Image (cartoon, rainbow, N blue to C red):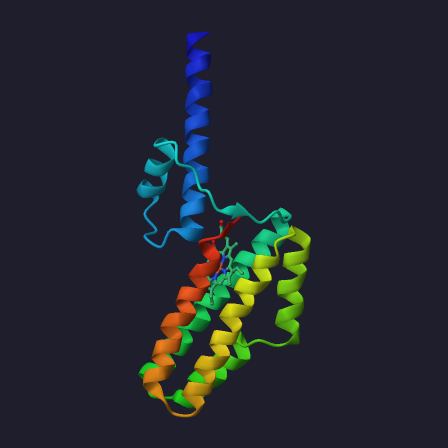
Length: 163
Ligand code: HEC
């Protein structure tokens, strides 16, 4: 009996760690899973709001997020190579605000009953358009500053929402 109890408790603990590490992947910029589990052990669970979406939609959303990471990398490289036309084009075409993006962000907002999701999403896409404008105008410094602000806006949503 004692042995069974031990196994049960061990199961709860391991399960808890897994949840903690999942949250760490999405939101903690340190990316150190030990930090996440320490928080959990200190009785300080992730307080961000969960986006109540079906598991399949979450998988799709995270795939989209990884695409966004690639886009940031491609923009950064284009700026490094002094190809500001390319940087501006990527920012506008892959991260800019348009009807399709609006429809997608709105759908998530409505499905989850979280109007802030749309607001935070729009903040990212409009900043990408600003970056694009500076890059296409040949203003490298302002484009880099906009890129930094853009990354902050990505994180702006990560600070509020989780899966
Ligand atoms: C409006 C909300 C929102 C915005 C804006 C947003 N994200 Fe996310 N992102 C999320 C959510 C929600 C998750 C899932 C977090 C979790 O797993 O708990 C996520 C997860 C991620 C992940 C982890 C993907 C994985 O495979 O686990 C990456 C990387 C990411 N986002 C990158 C970005 C980048 C880059 C941007 C900006 C260009 C961005 N996100 C903008 C909401 C957002």
